[in-house]
Length: 94
Image (cartoon, rainbow, N blue to C red; front, side, top):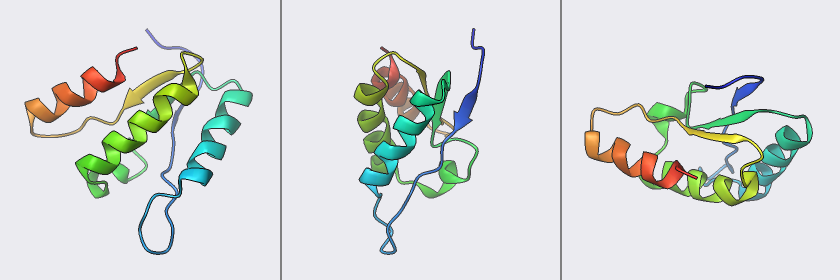
């Protein structure tokens, strides 16, 4: 299903804990220019247990148009809530 480099991307934060969207955009651009095949948002880099649902959704919503089909978008969807997983999957489907 997937091949190539799949990166569990880190979520850059400001000192106050807010997501650094400018740095996030630069990370996505860097991976696209390097030929990364897929980006894992909220994956195994530790974010899956520390991001709020709203933050994870915002990261996915910001990544999707930037990746625009040039790399797979994979949501770190570890949860005990089936409803939360369905919502994440519906947002990620391109």
